[in-house]
Image (cartoon, rainbow, N blue to C red; front, top):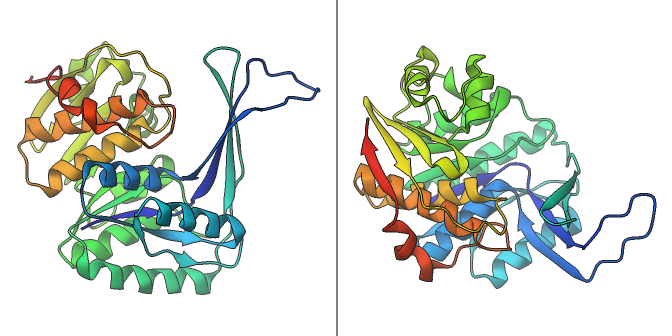
Length: 312
């Protein structure tokens, strides 16, 4: 089973309007409300691929109940740790063509007792876990090395982790005693980590950057480059993944869908090429849907066959 962790979940609300009017009334006819947070996007896509998956993390309040009810209705297993405070809303306003304005609440603050309880519950869940994914930001109250702690606990039980986060949480995981099996930074996150100014037209320099000592011990590094595909390092091998052009409808959540595809293929012990192509395919499939964290598997093989993966 793949266990997904979401430590700052939300109810994602999407408003679609023709024109956003500031300091005025905006009436909305199209509203979408989904169980949100990067880890839950991963969960849904793994589920849609047909993989065994369970979601964990934290929930609280009425919004937390809504989130669980939505997962129940989709037939997705979950085992969240309950906290006292309400989880957050994340509002996206789609307007004026392809513009998107986001309003993101900060979310709950966890107590020390809740953190201890969560860690105990997490250890119990690992007994049936084959692979762990950790995605997104941390709730307030959690230390920046919290993901490093989860990775270490999982590794002690022989379970590998795919980590998709940024900033100090990512850095702490990379300097921890136990490394994630895979990380999926974008180019901005690589530049922030290493204080560089690389762009997608500098693959050789990016290749050099991925040999930085900070990444030592990380088996897979998947650097996503949007429409330019990805540069991937697996142990000492480097690959360049090229993807076809698509008519993007909603790119939000495509990185999460990529993690889902990578996790699914890794859990099936597929080849390097198959793992990379699966991750690229699910990322593109998400971008073709209006609903975040969702793919139409009917189009999987069509896109999969158009992806090229070359060693370089």
